[in-house]
Image (cartoon, rainbow, N blue to C red; front, side, top):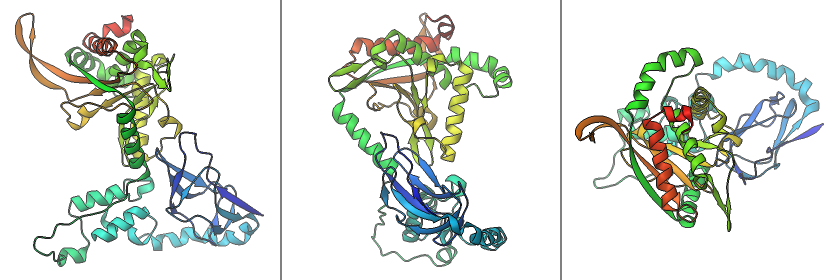
Length: 397
């Protein structure tokens, strides 16, 4: 029987996807639930697996093709499964012989990475892949180019460059980068964005963390960071000023009775924003566990579309990269975003005396169409006060 391999039903927020690299060739045996190809959406990379065991008899969509929900991309002959079994069983024995093959000749590199490597003269076998299963991504090749990685032959005999010639590279945007660009432009064009700033004395939270971090990790199995405190502080502020947790839908203001907080994390494909659902109902330990899990799976490319969809407010921590000050851009349809920055020791005045304190600058960008300056400023002050006096979070003050 011939069965169709289809693109899974994509969420409403994901209109289409791009086929990356086929894992199997026509005529090869496939096992049930075996990954046949990865597809890239504007949010995540998903696997398309074989619905039944058999032989791959046709591929109707090639690598790089744009596909939509339930599109047929290949067919499998399930009746050929028995005949294909010996070949499938022999495959592991052949694998060791193929292992030494360089990445450029195998399936360890994405198509965009192969093209860029060929254009830049980079030996893919010397590039460490950061993608799922060790696959080489376009970003890995870019890093190799930046670091001077070249094939052995090129190292012995550098390519001659004419005097005065300036090198250029033209690299297509990934679907994720295209979507990020689209949403940032949308945010700038449709929102009336203003940013309010404040500074926060991090010493109380730092002292609390230093006092309990070892016990916290032993008890809960996760490190005690600073992001958990900020998530808690943000939720407390949003409860006091619900308009900051709202969104715009046409001519309506939608007030959300829940607190789904997006936390920006880095991944090999760029910045992603997984959502901590119902953050108000989670303990500090549960929030820290969720953030740690997001960070790990973001690096592995295992975040789901659902985990990256929605959210009522976002926190972005540029301080992890050393950012001193910034004006974050709202993630539509949300109405506000908090930007955290690097904590530095600064001279401040307390009770008429100059003292040194670890200070972080905070920035909250907001949509002035629905949020007035008063609510924007006071909500950021509420975050500041909660961080400077963590007992407020316990006493709900």
